[in-house]
Length: 250
Image 1 (spheres, helix red, strand yellow):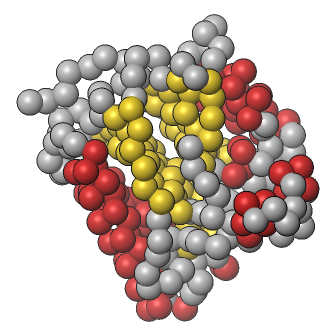
Image 2 (cartoon, one colour):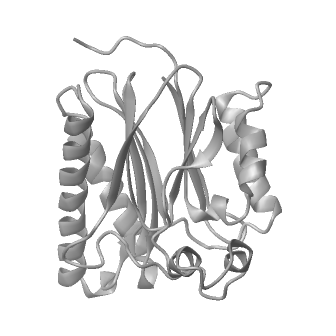
């Protein structure tokens, strides 16, 4: 498994409220996280950092994941705990009131990948059938598209594009989407905040991630460069995981 994580403040924002990383458990299995924080008084960075640290700490002492059921159970429990921690922190600290974060995270084993998402940070998969988005945005605009009220083209420029229907930490309970997919040789995952997906089209993403001339780090840098070239109004954060045979601990 090869993996890279990269984040950039962008060209407009004064602070980077995104967080995340690639973390390895004692058995060589990887957890990739992208979290895009939000909230008044710069509390978004608190929410995204708390989420990342919570999952990282649990993952780095977790037992080996053998099945999709184990991965999904671990993910659901860890994310619910993170939600509780953030929500309680915001209740006790007035400067953090209303803070929250999106999350997209993936447990990567040499047989499968289990993905969780809340909000509009996304996961894309490159495999033999092409490059496609795996997650559904939990946003007002995506609901309007799904219900046929507006077209995908209209959604790109909708004035309420940034309104989320779900976020981690904003309420006492939270719903999440969890799914497991087969992960095979030469497959790749791209996890990203909307600072990338709002700026770089899916076709452009595919052209970068399939470019065999570029290293994994080069691909990540190219994504950030393009998002900044197209305005860079938001923080830009991404993780790429490429399948490569490796021996997990017994």
